Structures are given as C-alpha cells and as structure tokens.
Image (cartoon, rainbow, N blue to C red; front, side):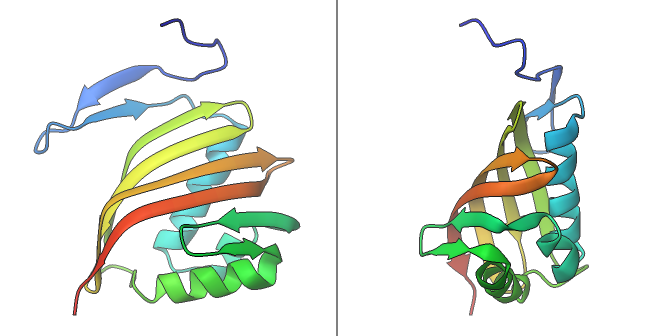
Amino acid sequence: MKKSNSLVQNAYYKEQNTGATKEILQPDASSGIIMHHLSSFRDNDLEAVLSDYTNESVLVTQDATYKGPGEIKAFFAELMTHFPKQKSSFELDKMVTNDELVYIIWHANTPSLDVSLGSDTFIVKDGKILRQTFVGLMKFIN
C-alpha cells in the first residue's frame, strides 16, 4: 500500500518492556498543537487545554457531543478529576498526521480509571482544534 507524501511516518521502534510498535513522527504544525493539548491535559491545566479550541469547535465522544468552549470545558473538567497530576500514567502509542488531520492511539492508568485503549481524531485549522472525536475503553476503579 502506497502512503501519501503528506503522511508523516519516519521510524518505528519497539518499546522495550511491552513490545508495542510505536511511530515516531516528524513534528509539524498540527502535531505540535496536539502535543500541546496532551501536555496541558497531563498537567491538569484546564485553561491551556481550552486555549486549543475555538467558539466553533466540536468534540464528539461515545456519550455526547460538546459544542464550544463552555461545553468542552465541562467535559475536560470532569475527565481531569480522574487524571490527577503525578498519579496518572498516560502513554501515547501512535500518532499519524496528514495535513490538518491528526489521529492518536493511547492508553492510561490512574487511581480511579483504567483506559486500555483510547483514540482521538482531530481536525486542526489555523492552530486550533476545530473538530475532535474521542472513544475509549474505560474501566472505572472503585
């Protein structure tokens, strides 16, 4: 299968302990926005997360659709309660970019949540997340 020139895929490596294949990508504008987004989320910096969105942004999840910063803020404020800083592990397993389209696969463990598989797709336009989808296999821990 021939890959598009705009599809950024430079190298693969084996993670030492799990044997999982990961992609390492050349940074570009869209992946830079997403890395900022993920870093802000891991730091529990709600305002920095929200700075990646616009008034026209839409987030679609398996449970609901969130439109605009107010609704998106409510989603992340709730989710961040399950990802306490320095008590959670979040691993980015794969990131693929194609111009404005960014696709990620990840997994995470926190004191109250096990996400064995998470995936987001982003449409990035003018340095902001315009559209996002999220799905995750999430198990809440009592």
